[in-house]
Length: 168
Image: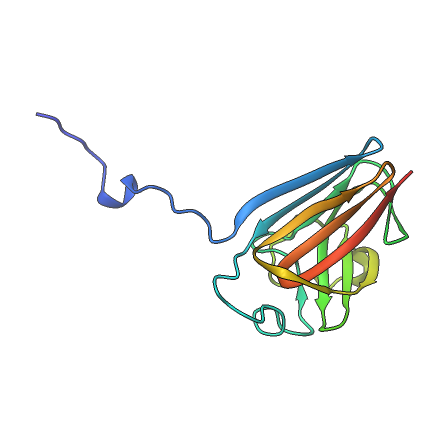
């Protein structure tokens, strides 16, 4: 006879995957490594992600669960603006024709509520969203890599936001 003590039906169930899985993407350019860590929500058939799921005027981290982070191991230029080496949380004020992107020094932060301390902002940039093919899962990638530069691209739904990175 086999006896099993202390087990209930719920403790033997397989773990369910998270709705927004963890992801890391990195690129090295001229000895400088750029790393983005984020959680990847799915569109799950929802249309108009921006304006509905992420409302216009929202202060949002591009991802889910924990704030998306970017880490650089050397000083870079992001869309021509200087960014010192370090790790930063990525936040954005989302509007139909422009986003205000913020890189914040306090990088370990849950995605709600949005941060309110303006003194924590290392870099603030205006960026223009573009349109592209439908991407069901939120994605960061490096589609262009040159000897001293790269493009970091955000994609979700039909929105694409490219960021130009130059290294020393």
